[in-house]
Structures are given as C-alpha cells and as structure tokens.
Image 1: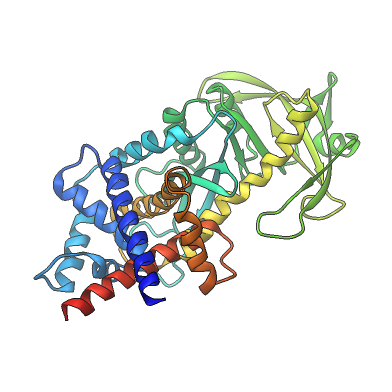
Image 2 (image 1 turned 90 degrees about the horizontal axis):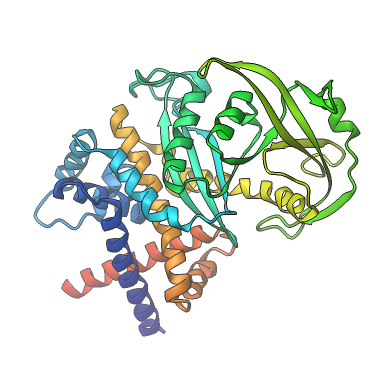
Length: 412
C-alpha cells in the first residue's frame, strides 16, 4: 500500500513539474532570465502553498544556501522591478487562445478584492470596498474553462478613466488575440448601450443580461421594455442542469426583435441605432419572474434559441473561477502594497489557475488514466470537492509535498 502510494505520488509530481516547465516556458517567452525565474517561482509557489503571501511562496523555492527572508526580499524586489507584464499576458493569450472555439462562451465579470482593514495599500479605493478587477474566462465545455484575462483596477490609479474603459480594455486585449471567436456572455452589470455598441462595432457576438428600465422600438413604435417583456409569449420549454447539483431549472422562454432608440455616441461623434433580439426567460431565480437578455445573434431558429438559453448558464464559470482564486489560492490575503506589485501578483494568480486548466486539457488527451487517479486521490480526502480544479490542485499539491518530504527523509 505504501509503495503504491509513493509510486502514484511520484508519477503525479513528476508529470506536473514536467508539464509546468513547458507551460512556464511558453508564458515567459521574450523575458530576461531573471524575469522568467521570478514568474516561474511565483506561479509554482502560489500553486504549492495555495497562498499569495510571499513568505509562504518562498518556502517552495528550491534555492540552497539562502535564508527564507532573503528569498522573500528577492521576490518583493522582483515584483516591483522592471518587467513587462503585458508581454506575459500576450504570451498567455496566444498560447491558450487556440483553445477557444467559434461557439465557446467567453464570460466577462467584475469582482472585488476586499481589504477591509487595509490602510497602506497604494490606490486603495472606498468604492466597492477596495480595488476591483476584470476577469475573462472561456468555457470549454464539460465543466472545463480557461482563464484568459485578469487585471485589477482602482478608481484612484493615475491611468484610470472609467469602469467602461476598463471593461473595453479587457475586451480589446482578449479579442485582439482570439478575434471574433466565441460569444461574449455577461451578467446584468454590463447592461449598457455604449457597451452594446462597442461590441457590435468590433463585430463580436454577445449575450448580456438586462435590468435597466428603457424604451425600445417594437414594430415601429416605442414601448417600455418591461411591457414588451410581459407580452412576449413563452412557447418553448427547456430543462437546464445545474453543475454539481442534482436539481436544475425548468424554464420557459420566448424571443422578439427590438431596436434600441438612437443615442449620441460621443467617442465616434454619431447617432447610433441598434437592432437586437430580446430573449425572455421564466424560471431563472424566482420562479414566476421573467428575466430578459439582449443579443445580436439572430434567434430565428429554435435550436439557436435553445443554445442561447443554455449559454447563460456558462456564466457561472467565471463565478467559480473567482471563488477558486479567493478561497483556494487566498487572493484577498495579498500583502504586497505597491500597485505594480498587486497587478503582477494578480497576473501570477491567473497563470496559476490557467496552468491547472491547461494541465487538465493535456492530460485529457495524452494521459487519460492519470486524470481519474488525481481526482480520486482528492475525492477520498474531501468528497465535497466537486469543482474539477479543486481536486486537481489538491492532488498535485499533496503528491509534490509527499515527494518533497520523502526526499528529506531519505537524505536525513
């Protein structure tokens, strides 16, 4: 039994380290040797320690003859030093963007980094209890996803213009690599005519949850959108399973074409009229309440409507990612205070999750027997760990820690 456990742990550890070297090399192309080393150590340390605290990350740096404090100081200097995080982000997008298909869901969301007792963090803002960040992830299907973009922003930072500009920066960065592939999915916080226009101008398809009270044009006449929503016949039925739950949603839905009235686009100095489809759904959340969505994807066919209704469920992928970063990798336990260092720690966090997602994709095609072995190792210890990446991270960290302890025992 002990030999089997040691053999299994050694295999998982060896393959994880081998795959990580490949992943890190692709993510740090074009950087100097010192910068590559910093990123590799930060990402691997975050995975193994499951923390963003430099003192815990430094414990996993294989560097003989130096004290822990010296390693922590070196990481701190490196995070504040001169290196181009935008290059790392582009490397990552070019390497992972190929996984995004034409019909993948590209989910975007805003989350908070809460530092309730923080006082000395640079550009700490009272808006939403702290600095906020944009997250973009691609849903690959079967519970799998791939993070594409994660960047913090603060209303007090000198380069900050507006939240709309930050959203647009994330969209431009990701779409600049993946092009027009995928359908952008977002919750009601993105119900913005300006954003509809920006996505349409870039010929990007979208599905955005709506909540604002506005006037729309239907059959040549202006009407309040809520009155239109209440009159849309819900003639179609669909059951949507909820990930990790036995019960799902029984919903009804219907569609109609609408037109958003003209408004002045100040950035392009022209009047803009938008023709969209209104997708009305009953069964999400409160049973009898109707929610509605705007999309620029034609919904003339019943199959297209059904797929679009299911697509909104993909939005939970970004919520799972944010929860994973905060609960398992301790995103909000960040101790670095310089804004540049905060940006880089967030980038390393995204790469840590991206490596897990990339590892799952690699093992699913090249080492199909190893994936069930990793997941079963964790499920035996924590049966409630339903999220795939929880189990992979825990199994990988457990195996590497076991091998590390075994090596120390042998040397001692």
